[in-house]
Amino acid sequence: MIDVTDQVEFNNPDDELLPLTKCVCGKTFESWDFNIGVYDDMPTECSNCGRKFVFENNVKVFQVE
Image 1 (cartoon, helix red, strand yellow):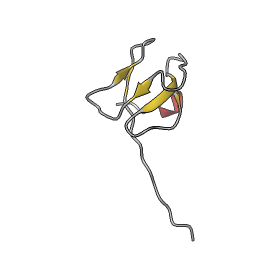
Image 2: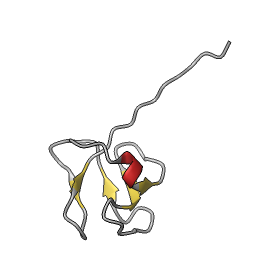
Image 3: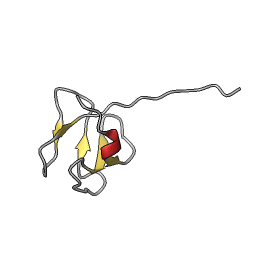
């Protein structure tokens, strides 16, 4: 897998879905028209370039001193 986070645009995830609004190839989508999931064995393919995507969501909690 290749980290392309800085090459795409997206809105906030909803559980196991992340709405991509801009693909690596530059194609733009309306929110929730192109959704990618979290499962490596079920990637979502861009209708324009054929690249396949999944995402992971990492949350960090910090104590401020």
